[in-house]
Image (cartoon, rainbow, N blue to C red; front, side, top):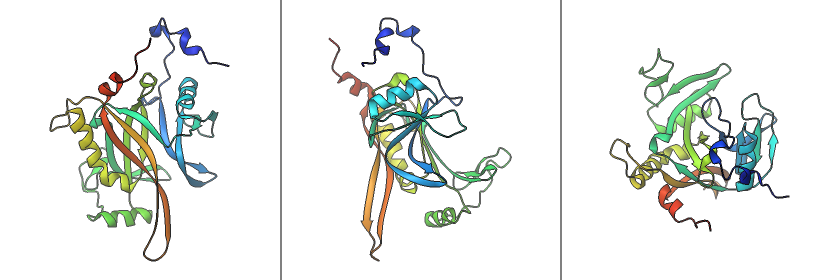
Length: 246
């Protein structure tokens, strides 16, 4: 049976029901993993969570999968295990990309810094955080559970359905944080932002899950997934290339 819901509002789009936003203004989240019991599982295709049935249905239509409820006490109680490794997105400007270092404990966030100074709470903001200077030492401390790890946040719209609103992707990938400056430079460069990262136009990009496999010199097989962001051009130009409706 065809889904004709969108045609009902075609002649009066302003009256159409709007996708429900989260309390933090995000309509949904892209995730590259999930918990199975208490064990984390890395996924080869994107998982999208949202609290809005219309958004979940549209994501399933675009990226494959089925919208289902999942066990959570958060607002995004619907999930779509998509069939898509990559998705076309629109990033408004480089201010929609952020990174910091976070460590969570039983009571929530217990350490939040930029690698040099605390970012929160307010009473500690600006004070030295005590993290090691060397990148590898920071990784080792995080692996032992005694130090923070990266928290990369990217806000974007779906290129094929920008009307749905803003989605969010958060990653703790050390590989992503190492090359994040190049992604920001691409967003600013292609978008035409000034030296302060302001005034740029929205860009089109791809958000993908890339499989990495290799064998170490010691003969150990290593396999993991990493998120990849590739800026492909101006969003306005991409939209102009789309075929016009008859």
